[in-house]
Length: 223
Image (tube, rainbow, N blue to C red; front, side, top):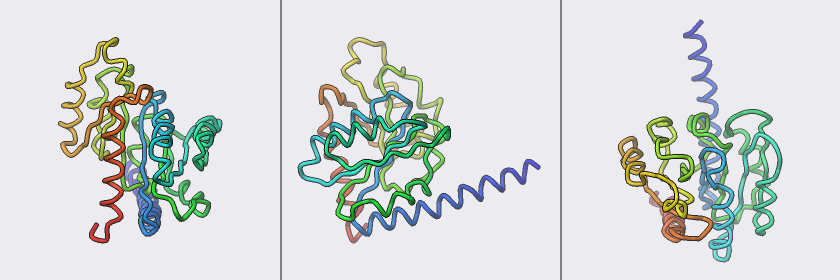
């Protein structure tokens, strides 16, 4: 029975991988960079997206897919910034899947530069599911504590970048910033690491430049 369960799970993930590959190809054909944001609840994903909308929205065309168990609150916040947003409510599922993105795909404008996907808030299930993104970022907030990378290694192993958020709280809370960076890099040495505060804007510019450079490389004919 145990072997059968493993085979069934592999088959399900394999199906997800196939849909994700199709979504990624379709986005890149349109020169759209798909960005998957993963984190625990309350890390500041939506606030970061609001800041990205304000700072990149003038020169780049953005859209957002929001994933939550219930409510459209986050999508409403993004729409208030003048950015198209779609809410996926999972009704209890702890992650998004590529087929959910695929269902929305026909509604996505073809002239976008970035499609951000705010995943359901947790560091476990989302790490196992490719959504068709070309860039995966994992967020950690200072109030969460500095012990997360080794507790949830797959989230960091599958990511391209680590964004440590709410850096404005570093002077107030006990937090081993260099220790967190090193622990994450021990798991995945290729991680690009950013420390920022979406509230104050400190450290945001290097991350925005990274997004733009990553898109340029991803859509290049030589990519």
